[in-house]
Length: 49
Image 1 (cartoon, rainbow, N blue to C red):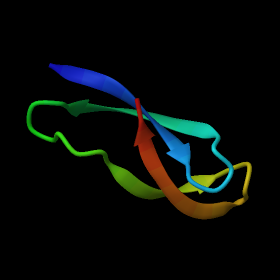
Image 2 (cartoon, rainbow, N blue to C red):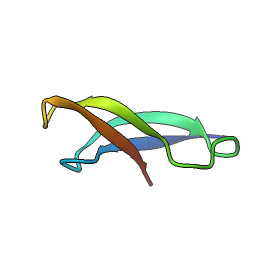
Image 3 (cartoon, one colour):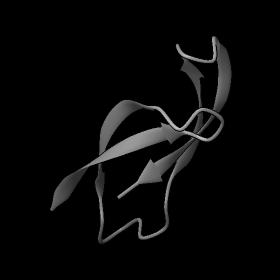
Image 4 (cartoon, helix red, strand yellow):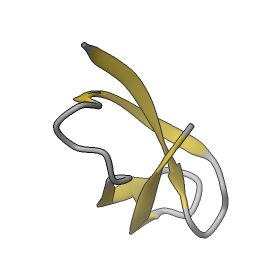
């Protein structure tokens, strides 16, 4: 039931990270503050489809 999701930087729109999540238990989109190598800073990364 776990599906692969990708995280996109909210500032430069680059897709940097991948992860898995259970779509039945967590239906909302995830958002984490991660390091973006393109921006060279910690920025919010949102889940993309």
